[in-house]
Amino acid sequence: MKLPHLLLFALAACSPPVNIGSDEPADYGECEYVARALVECPAMPWGAPRSFATLESLEQRLVGRWAFCGGEKRYTGRGPLLGFSHGTGVEFWSEAGQLHYAFLSGRGSGLARTQDDASAGTVRLLLDNGRGRAVLASGDGQEVSWNVDFFEGQVVLQNGAFDVWNFVPVE
Image 1 (cartoon, rainbow, N blue to C red):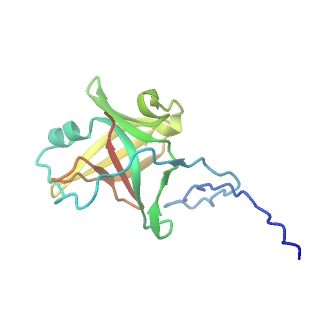
Image 2 (image 1 turned 90 degrees about the horizontal axis):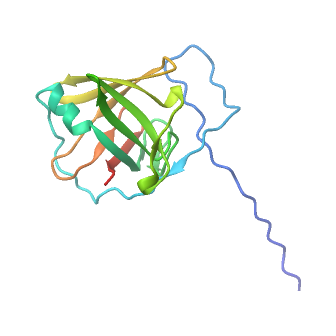
């Protein structure tokens, strides 16, 4: 009796751009690289959402390097979000009175700011009844709004505007 041959196929996973709020049709011909989370999120529960009284206190909490640690698909499907199409994290910093951001690539001590215009730019912070929001304006002219949530029990940055992206501080 001959055993059937087993064929293995490798599939390349990708994250096509999600065309949100545009009249232009999306181009799904190219796929973005999706970086798998290099760190784990802390065990839940994380405590109550933290409320902010001032933009300065929100900025002080936000500034730093944040590594993507996982999330949840809500807009692009259902289930856990194990990868991040923008790299391995994000950094926020203030320079000459302006808040900036850049997505990070690499791992560990080798994390570096992404240099292309679509992955870096300026940030405008807003408060809505104590909840933080960040409008990220990239160098190529695109704007996206993040919900900027922090928690009382764990140091976790969460953006739940569409899919849920969780980040922990880079140490």
